[in-house]
Amino acid sequence: MQYKKYTQQLFLLMLLSAQQASCKQQIKEKTMAIEQFKWEESTNAPLGYPAEVYQGGLELASGGFVGLFHGTIPGDNGWGSPGSGMSSGAKTLPNKLDVKYLSYAENQFYYANCPIDYDKLVRVFKEPLQRRGAMGNLLADHFDQVNVGFAPGGVVVVWASGPGHRVEIGRYQAEKTVIPESEINRLDGAAHLIFEETEVERVMHSNSIIPLAVQAANKNKPIPFGLWDSYRKKYHWRPIFQIQQEGKMRDFSFTYFNGERNKYFYENNIQSTKNSELFYQEVQDSITFAIPSSIGFSWFAKDSRKYSGYFRFNEQEIFQAFHKLCASDTTTHIEMLIRTNIPNSYATVLLRNSQGKEIALIQHDDEEFFQIKR
Image (cartoon, rainbow, N blue to C red; front, side):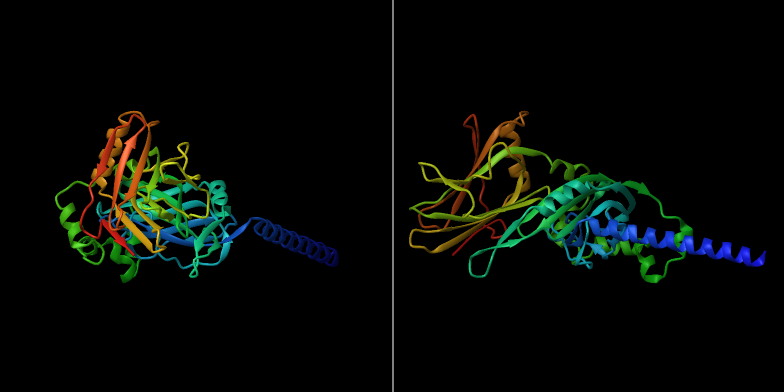
């Protein structure tokens, strides 16, 4: 009887072992079947409203996990601009966000536990990108970052980023949460800092995290809840360039208040109208864009000398202009006319709608807002 019982136990162990091996193989095959991309994670916050991830990160479609704890997020490069990650390499893309973070300006913790539009993320990562090489030639490139932005009010936005491009994948709502005292008490000194009032005060008054000018501008003002959602509104508009004296347009790029970005190269789909206005076939009226925060562009003069220009738009001014030109009709088409002068030392920006109404955007002498280089 003992021998028979031993044989049965051995058989069950062998069967269980075979099932476990089969299960592991299936998991391995499933993971390998999910397409992998070379990318790294990144975090972002609006300037003046720093955040910090306390716990969690991105869950991958393969079942893996990428943490988003990178310390205090200052947002010094603008809403949507990615920072540096720590997990570069080939892996599957994320399909879920599971993260707890602190909004320093509110001294409030939030918890985001929501699915990410995985199919959209995959489609975007499969889109080919280009960048201009050191010799001026166009080189193939690709999206290489998944950036997560944390704004006051529990606003969380995920972007896919690559050279010259950022695409919003989705906007998500985090809920207010309270970290239990029992959990806080178990933390060591470094991890415990985020829960101390003195640390919150230090971060909000640190010039290296929030520039003094921004601190002064925000002083005694309420947190502009809803601002980052207003950035996401899109309009039917396109840029049109007028280069004088038979000059030739080269490349241009737009960064938008919603954190997205586009870059265009003159080799791709450039068209010319009879009155020398230049635009790109890709930028059609049927496509909507958020309001731009800045534009960079370059052109060649008749003598082949290269020039480049940069505008950083005044937020209040350009939003008011778009609202006046569109009124309540979001289907109104708007053109942004960028016109260089004959000496190639200056450029003007004019907005006009399909009814012929025009608004010139004021050019600031400060190089922070406007510059022409050659």
